Length: 575
Image (cartoon, rainbow, N blue to C red):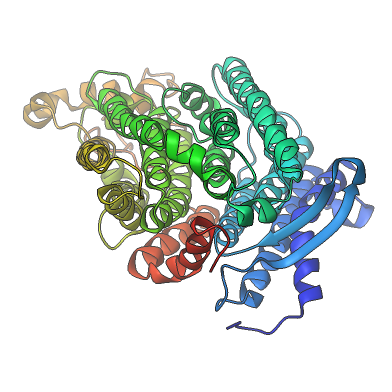
C-alpha cells in the first residue's frame, strides 16, 4: 500500500536528490550570494540558504516515505544501480527499505530543525558560510550512509561525516574544543582503518561488495574464520562510532565542547550510523561471526548501560560540579547500550527493539541537547550546581515552559510508558530473555537482569536532574533566613554575582531589574525571570516532542516498517 502512487523513476530521483542535494547546497553556500538574495545581512542570507536546502531535503524525504510501498517494507525500493569502478566491481547502488527509511527521515528532520534554530540563533564563531556548508556536508554523508547498498560506498559515506563534525567542534565549540575535536577524529579514524580491512576482506573473499547480494547469501560464501575476523574488524569501527563501552571516552568530551547544533546532530544521527552498520552489514553478511561475538557484545552493552548511569549519578550529585551536557552525553552511552544488547540477541524482537530505540534516542536526546543549550545560553553555564542555585528558584519559577519541556524530555529519556523511550528498551529486554538459537540463554537472561537494573539507575539520575534544575536546591538557610538576609542571598545567586555593578554598588542581572532594595527597583526577594521559550525555539523543538509522544502511543507505525525487513534480514534474504 502506498499513500500516493509515485512511479519508480521518480522515487529513484527523489532518493538521489536527498543524498546529493545537501552536497550541492554546501558548495553553493561557499559561493558569493547573488545580489538579489543578499538582503541586509549576508550572514542571515547564508543561514537562510541552509534552511532552504535542508527544508527541500526534508520535503523530498517525506514524499519518498509517502510513495514507499508499506505493504512490502522488506523490499528494497527507489533503487539505483550504476557502474562506478568496473575494475573493482564498485557500483553506485542506492535503495531504501523499512530499516533505512526511518533513519533517513530522522536525519532530514533533525538537520532541518538545526538549520531553523541556527537561523534565529547563529552559533558564536567564524563566518556562518563555513558553518552552513559543514552542516550540509554532514547531512549528505549521513543520508548516504543509510541509503547506499555497496560496502565501499558505505565506508566512504561513513567517513565523510568525520571532517565536518571535527570542524564544527573545533571552530564553533566551547571550552577545550581543540582537545575534544582531536580526540573525536583520532578515535573514529583509528576505528575506521580497522573497519576498512574487514570490508576489504569480505569483498575479496566473496567477490562482491554488493550488500544486498551478500545479505541474500547470508554468509554461505564465507568461511567461519573469515566471518569471525570480519566481524571483529568491522565491529571495532562501528563500536567506536556507536559508542560502545569502553570505546566511548571521546563522546563526553565531544558533546561538552560541541555547539548546540553539533551535539544534536552527533547524538541524533551520527551515533546511529554505528548501530545501523551492525544491523545492515554484520547480522546478515556474517551471521556465524556475529554468533561468536554476540555474548561479548551483549556483555559490553550491559556494562555500558550501568557505567553510563553511574557516571550520570556521580555528575548529578550536589557539589560534584557536573556539567549537564556531559551528563546527557554519558546517558547516551547507556541508551546505546540497549541498542547493542538488542542487536546481540540476533532475534527479530531484539533487533526491532534496537531500531526503535535508535529512533527514540534520536528524538529524545536531540530535544535534550536543544534544551540544555538553551539553558546554558540563559545562565551562561551548564554547571549543575550553578543551575540548581541556592534559593529554590530554578526553571519552574523562572522559565516555567522551558522547565516543563526539560522535565518532559527527561521523563521520556528514562523510558516512561506511553513515550518513545519505553518500547525500545522493553523489546530489547524481551529479546535478551529468549536469544537466538545457539546463544546461551542463562547468560542473556543475566544480561537482561543487568539491563533492567540499568533502567532503574536511569530513572534515578534523570529524576535528580529534574529536581535540581527545574525545582532548585531547597536548603534550610534559604527557607528559614530572616527578611534582612534577602539581599545577601540575592547577591549570592550566580546571576547576581555575574551582573554588572551600578555606581551605588548595586547589581543588575544582565541589564535587567536590579536586585537591591533601593527605591524604584524590584524587591530583593523577587527572583529575576529568564526568557522563556522563544518562537524559533518552539518551532525547532515542538516536532521532536510531538513525535516522542506519537511513537510512544502508536509504536506500530515504526514497527510495521522495521519488522518485515528485520525478519527478511535475519532469514538470509528470504521473506
